[in-house]
Structures are given as structure tokens and as C-alpha cells.
Image 1 (cartoon, rainbow, N blue to C red):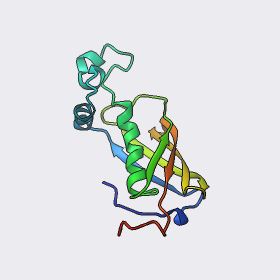
Image 2 (image 1 turned 30 degrees about the horizontal axis):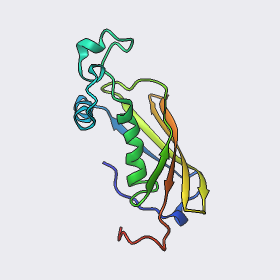
Image 3 (image 1 turned 180 degrees about the vertical axis):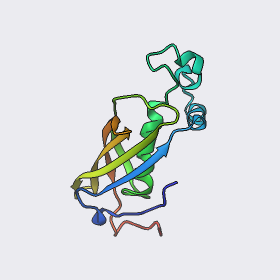
Length: 148
């Protein structure tokens, strides 16, 4: 689990980056299916998945995307950040047992509204499996009353 790091808008600079590596377990995928309600058998049934082009179970695309949220909410920018939008481009499957590396990088800072545009890349063994951009509102030091 990522340790909390709270950054205010004034702490951010273009090029700042944070990473997370998450091992995808069967229990993660089953748990995500329960929480999300997405019980597509490609995620849950090895027998079903064996007959697909992937030949094995794969993680939900939004499970992988949720790892981006973990970085935004805990490290960059961290607690207090508010998601405004997210684009997602799914490039390749994530399989049970994969280690997903999530990299979030500050691409642009917009003083009006304290917004940050962040690139978000998820990869497995150097292959990009998901890429996109997030737009977040970041508290300023004047607005921060979180006590973190």
C-alpha cells in the first residue's frame, strides 16, 4: 500500500512523477468483480477465458485504471485532489500474475482553478497496457485544512 504524500498546488512542478507497482492476483480480480458487479466470465472463469483470444483470465480494464486513482489519491498530488476527468486508452490485456507499473507525471499546471493535467501510463514488462490523461483540482496551501 502506498504511503500518503500530500502535495498542494504550489508544491507541483511540470515533470514531477510517481510510480506504483501492483501484482495482480486472482483475489484482486474476484474482489473487483464483486465490488463493481462486472462478472464477465473472461475475468472469473479459466474455462471460458481459454476459448478467447487471450487464452487465460484477464483483469478488468477499470481495475487497471483504478490503480491510477490510487496514485492520484495517495501520492501525486495526494489527499485532497479532486478528479475532474480521465481519458483511458486500453492497449493490451493485464493477466492474473502480471505486475502492473503505473506512472503518473505532471504535464501541465493551470493556476486558474488550481488544476493539473497528468499523463497516466500503465505497463507490464515494458509494454503499455493503458494510457491516458487525468485532470485534477489540487488544493492550494491556503485552502488546505486537511491536517495531513
